[in-house]
Amino acid sequence: MRSFFISLQSEFYKSRKTLAFWSSILLPLIICFAIALGFIFKYENLVKHPPQILWFYFLSPIVGIMGSLLLPVLVIYNTYAVTNMEYKGDTWKSLFSLPLPKLSIYSSKFLYVIFLTFLTMLLFAVLIIVSGHAIELFRPQLKFGDFNPSEIIFRSFTKMFLSSIGIISLQFLMNLMWNDFLKPFGLGFLLTIVGSICANVGWKYAIYLPHAFPSLTVMNIMSSKKGIEFGVFDQAIANSLICGVVVFILGYFILLKRNIK
Amino acid sequence: MSRFAIETVGLNHHFGSQVVVKDLSLKVPKGSIYGFLGPNGAGKTTTIKILLNLLQSPADTVFIFGKELTNNRIACLKEMGALVEQPAIYAHLTGKENLINRCILLGINKNKATEMLALVGLTEAANKKAGKYSLGMKQRLGIALALIADPELLLLDEPTNGLDPNGIIEIRNLMIELTSKHGKTILVSSHLLAEIERTATHVGIINKGALLFQGTINELHDLSKPSIKIEVDDHAAATNILSGAGAEIINEKEGTIHIGYTGKADMGNYNSLLVKNGVTVYTIGTEKKDLEHLFLDITSRN
Ligand SMILES: Nc1ncnc2c1ncn2[C@@H]1O[C@H](COP(=O)(O)OP(=O)(O)OP(=O)(O)O)[C@@H](O)[C@H]1O
Ligand SMILES: [Mg+2]
Image (cartoon, each protein chain N blue to C red):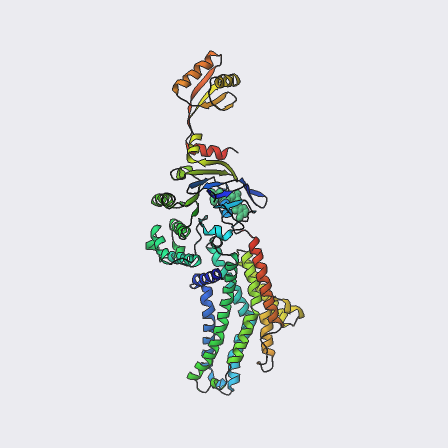
């Protein structure tokens, strides 16, 4: 257990200056800031709406784009960046010649990617709430403060975060097997597009395509009654978690049998 | 406890259908500097990767300080520090951060990083991105990374690659100090016999995956003792006569015989003995191989 925390600590240390780490923080920051500016400048058209709708207007573009593209691309990039760091410096060999169990090294990397995704989702949730209240400071006409959206927002982002675990596990495995940019990225993109289409046309087997889980999740949120009556767990989330666990274990056994070149 | 730091027993490894390591039985005594020599593609790096369990090997073929490697992976790796091929370095971190990261992973005090930088002469470049280091500076950082855990056994794959003459001497002295003062064991690979001749106590020569020579540096020197080369018309008769006279026959080929050199007087005696017995001696003279030729000779034999 100690070796796992050591490895995780090292992952933080190594990546704190990388694009993957900063993009996880800057992405929600920039998007929320941009939408907030939109609200501030175009407030005349929005004054007539009740607070609940104002929050919905802030949230829905983020959630919409998140499910169809942003979330899959984000995790595809993060898994690539975290594993590529070792390929680039040819450091796999030194990692695996340290007196640490292979499981610690493997699982800490996996968990770190999940952590980055979690961080982005958490920041989105927090920053959306902060932004709403900040907008009201500049434009008191927009009564964001009259409705408390925290619960719905956190529920949405928790759900989206969980829906990405399946993709993370698959991308992680691909990146472990191939020292390549194109293969995991190209395949990941392709699967994301296919998954998104399958989810949107309502193909009944989309529930088995990990890359479709975020789309399915967002559709589930958007189509729920008033956009608020949805549960965190549904079949897509369950499948995402199952996929994550199965592929994680599978990847570990592949790693055990493999030569590190 | 075994008296060997590294022992391999009939080790084999192949990439696809290519056999890269063939029936290799290394014996690296504790406290030695073991020069692991071989030309490009001989299998040196592959062997070192097997010793680190980076490449899979069957059980009971590799022993580190007497411990079986595959079943005691972590215990074995605790004893080892390694520099394999080009140094493994995170280009986006500074030299110091690279070492601190290693301290985190090994659970050792971070002050060790500063100490190591001084040891390999990188103190001034400590806060420069390692990706911007020169070849030799990267190599120095790689050596620092191998040494930082103060391991009992060091595996250094061509450590002087890219180093300036000063750096080469520093590494040489460091290796001698580590073994003589601190009782460490070092396996160091190289293409050049001359380079490790000054430091190595033991030598293993590998070519095409097979070990062609293994022994102390003195045993290697013995191989290069001078010999007498004699060209004659009838080498069978000459061989008979010479061995009858107590000469040590090293080898005999169509028309030429090599015998051990024992002194000028003996050489004159052999000459007259042959002539007296009706063998025509075309030439007779001494031959001495330097080690570099010997190495070339050994590695080009098959
Ligand atoms: N990952 C690999 N896949 C396939 N073949 C490999 C691999 N690594 C090494 N080889 C082959 O194994 C043989 C031995 O390579 P190795 O790197 O061990 O040689 P070496 O003695 O270290 O050579 P050098 O002095 O050039 O470093 C070579 O023929 C090489 O082509
Ligand atoms: Mg090599």
